[in-house]
Image 1: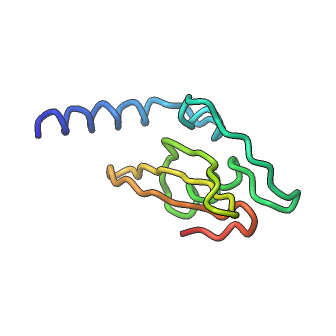
Image 2: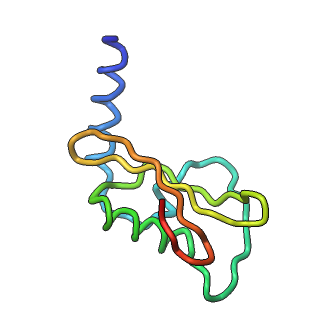
Length: 97
């Protein structure tokens, strides 16, 4: 239990220390899968900005994944009070859930 709180404090301090940067700098450093969307689609950067504004939180991870025949952006957000929220944004319509 103590380890959890220590990890949480370290994570929060790291997130607070990150200057405001574009979404690409915040995503996981693993190799990214490159999915093409229609020109009218939502980019990963746009999806991250939408989610951060809607939930008033910082993105700590973002990736684009294929779910069947749909492409969606999955974003992990961390709020100022320490709550973690996972959000998915449809890459075609921008619908968020």
